[in-house]
Length: 234
Ligand SMILES: Nc1nc2c(ncn2[C@@H]2O[C@H](COP(=O)(O)OP(=O)(O)OP(=O)(O)O)[C@@H](O)[C@H]2O)c(=O)[nH]1
Ligand SMILES: [Mg+2]
Image (cartoon, rainbow, N blue to C red):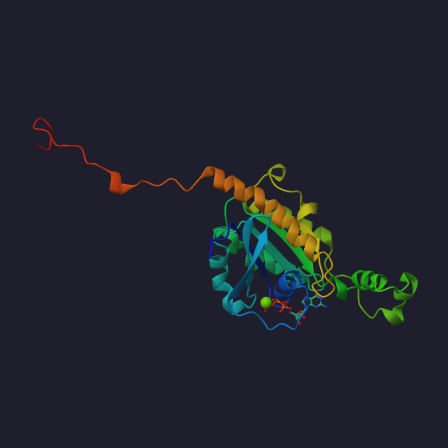
């Protein structure tokens, strides 16, 4: 198997929907999932490039593995559940530190999943199904509450990440471009998320290729200087 050209890693608390997002994108469906053990990956061919996408376990007991999965990552998707504010807090408290092993120019996307469970998301998906928005907005049809985490909260986290990584806002993609709200259930924004990242990862792969392999010293070709009589070691 050819070595992948780029690596994308999904991180985030358990139950936020990392596996579901990946399956929605790769398999075009929303199957029942079981909580991930360790990690698993898919290979995606994007143009002429092979990109590996790693799904990781959010459960605390697997936390130690996170930084291993992030090693050399070209992009990291930090995932939270828009209906659980604590899952956004966990991204900063528990997951950001795991990304220290990623590539130095690693991209970060912040993804709020399960928007279909909140009022706005629910109305949106019913509109798509042909229901009138007026009816759909009626309380008897919308037992769902408002979204608990706003997009601005994700944007604020993105800016904190830049600070943590000591990156300048003008050198990286804008927060508005890198914060997404998705639903693995309806497919809302899922293709947009992955394909935006693939398009951003490709120039990084090309840049890394142009720089060539890391500079190393070939000790097999090293010839020690010949000792002479006049030399101090003679
Ligand atoms: N309504 C709704 N449910 C979702 C969505 N995404 C995932 N779920 C459900 O949330 C639960 C957890 O989803 P997973 O994809 O297994 O979550 P995970 O982040 O991979 O969890 P770990 O593997 O334990 O880290 C499952 O019951 C999914 O069906 C979504 O967009 N909308
Ligand atoms: Mg999972």
